[in-house]
Structures are given as structure tokens and as C-alpha cells.
Length: 183
Image (cartoon, rainbow, N blue to C red; front, top):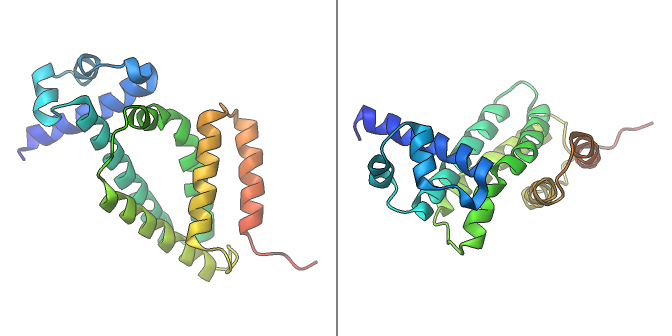
């Protein structure tokens, strides 16, 4: 793909995330084109349907999350990295909810299992590093962390969490993940 085509694709994806976050399902590809400052034909050359655009947004988001988890796993304090990743994902959930809801309501099967698997692997690496550093209980498994992430993100999406509720909820989750302290 040519460099200008890659830039246009990236601009379209960024614009689409913004339009769908602001407009929800009423957002249009015309609004995406205007926000990206490209012609509508350019949008359709990259994404022939609205569903294809939504799928690309989700694939891009999953790749960014996997990269973030991998970077945090390499930090000096991977336990803090796990908690940072967790809090970041929950805070993003409400902003990204429109894309997730559009995909769910449209009954679109998102064929991105490789992206999901990459994210799971990155979270697992982050968890294992946090456990090795002693910042997360050794009996916590990946499926538990994924279930907690999903639950907290669903809460952020559907309950319209305010920051205080989000902070209190995350504090309870993080306390449950940390090793017990001897008194």
C-alpha cells in the first residue's frame, strides 16, 4: 500500500472512531469522510461498507491494546502495568462503546480472532510478569482477569459510570488481585 493510502486509511479510522463515539449508530460514512478530510470515494475504496469500517476500527483498537499491554509488561513494575492497563481499558470502554454496540446491534460477526488472540497473549504476558514480580496473587488466572476486565468494561458502558464509581470499583478489583498482606 502506498504511503498516502496508508495515511488516508489511518485518518479515516481515527475519524470514524470519533464520529461513531459522538453520533452512535446515526453516524454516517459521509461524516467520517468529512472528519477525515477525504472524499467519500476514498472511504469506500478502503472500506466498501460501514460494517467493514467498524470491523477495521475494532481490529485497530485490539492491536493498540495488545501493544499497550506488551509495553507495560516490559516495564520495571509489571503489576503497576497490569493495573494501569486495566484502568485504561475500563476508561476507554465508554468512549468505544458505540462501535461495540453498532457491531452487536447489526449482528455483524467480527472476523478478527487473530487480533483477539494477540490481545489475550499480551494480557497473559502482563499477568505472568506481574505475578513474578509479586504484585499479583499467584492463583489468579488469565480467564479470571479477562472476566474482570469484561465485567468492569460492561459496567462502564451500561451504567454510565462516573469517575468516583470507576475509581472505587477498580480499587476493589485491584485489592482482590493483590497478594494478601501479613499483619
